Length: 484
Image 1 (cartoon, rainbow, N blue to C red):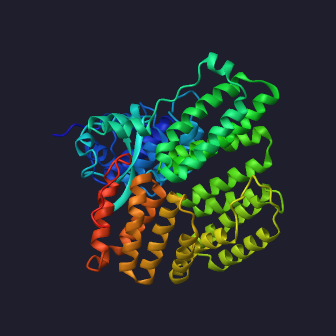
Image 2 (cartoon, rainbow, N blue to C red):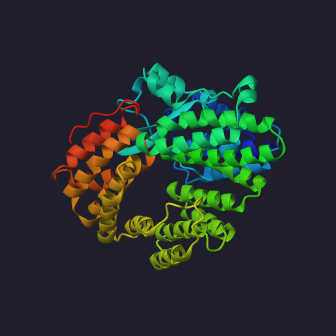
Image 3 (spheres, one colour):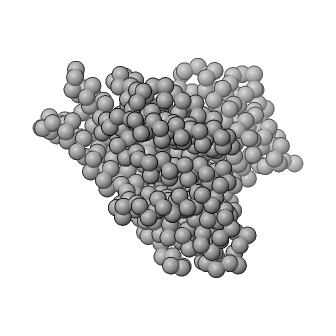
């Protein structure tokens, strides 16, 4: 006779109610705690404590469990309600980064076998006490290329020490003596940020983000030691660092960190009173919401960015572009086309402020529109526009080239030209492996699914094999593709 489960007390409080709902979903799916633990990559002992409200529940654990149980976001919504209703006594492990995710998709559910990627390590129990120390890596799971948060100790146990060391560095603030002897801290950190931006597109954020995080910790320490105007100047610069860290985290597939850094940047922008900076970060949050599958949220954020931006500024154009793509993803083609026409008109008379959106031009708007055309199913025009964008892109923008190639390949697949799509996609695979860019991998995953029914056509099988090799190879060890 099996062991009787402990009785739950959903009326005892919000987390007891959440634990009760977790058990209800688990039992409805006929899963034991052990089976759910394997599926969600969570320590089995934690699940019982979650159900009995004996252990704090990290939000991303709720996301993973919701997906593993096909709960249609019910557990995530329940977590958010519990977090609002629970007393603020530290009873929930919920960092600012976690609560800012508004439904970020941590796609690590349903993974019983990881193939070549740390297969032995995943047989071990994964302790949620190690959650903050994770590496996000791409892997093919049940036919999809997904980004999986892997506990660092599991990566180390699997022999991928180089990956762990590269991706999750220790970030320490400068010593007091170093802070005291630094000449102009603002100029020092501003110059470092410029160098990081120049380096990013060539080698990718997976290699650049650790350095940025180290400098961000040092900048934050220097800002806390400063007073008056100096402190406010450094806070404005720290805000830009946080926004850039959010962008890098998004590009390597770490959506939780991306939302956290961007939320911190938005908070800091309000403190500085810089409305331009606030408008820009609102636009970035709109972009992040779009890329993580929340177009309705993205439209609201883009509208807020446009409302905050100075009329006639390039920030207004950026906000309209995000509104346009949100319309496209929502299937509102007429509104999307109208918004792009508005963006072009605004760009034609926008000021040249030099700080925000200096990269905006007609070619950029047309490339953004190509992405929306693909979302609307207008693949012929999207493919032509992406091909033009790739031809005009400077060689130094290697990571962006990979993004454009992957999107162009998906558009060509939409037209039915599977062989051409496979050839273009294969070019993006190498860049994805070099940079570890989640944006490229996500596009290649869509392409992979589109090409799956056409595996017999020229180059398709080779492309899919090379993608599998690249997605299961540590990003600091470039993959050897099967086909070139």
